[in-house]
Length: 264
Image (cartoon, helix red, strand yellow):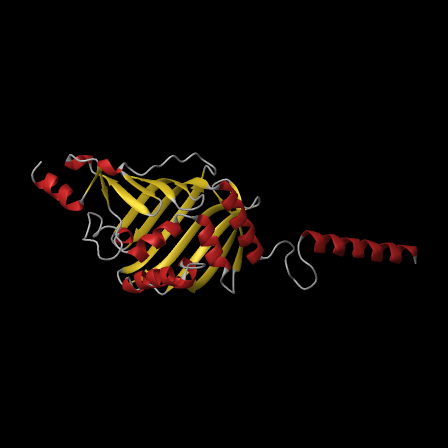
């Protein structure tokens, strides 16, 4: 009798340990939900305020790679995107020393003449596209947009480099993802830019570490030009970012840049 009772007690202890370390009887894993992981990551990245972002954009015509130093501290993005491009407080500037000038402003609200980046980066050439670019540079807005999805898949744990991370996935309308929390007029600008490039849906994957840091994000979309995948890896959280707008006296117009390029 004692042996049977001892065996029964051992079985109960073993089951309790199994539930505590893995899953309970209904098969539900212990730990925070996928939505909670997104929320915690948004808080963690909000506190970090800056990072080095390694950005790879893969499209049918090739892969663009850049390393950017980005600050998303309020109120606006400040970023050095490399190749002489900087984004400061809602404006984008290109180093124009190759044309014998100093700086040219290259973002466009709609209605501005076509600029040097028009063929290579439509993101700079429309109000909605440039707004979407700035939001992509801010990991908090991406996590917030994903959190607006009713369904977040937990794809399990995996390693990103040496960092053990939980991979989450959302599939949702692109406007809801990129324009989450925006005012009506800004949301309309983002929607217009997405419609112009033929993008209606985005699949976004997030790798979140045990301490709540966003380690990597991948956004996959279909466009009228074919599939596009943007992979952003976050390094050196909290890095100092000192990016300033050029003085007004150093700015030239696009027409002046063309004139100097043609007649140096």
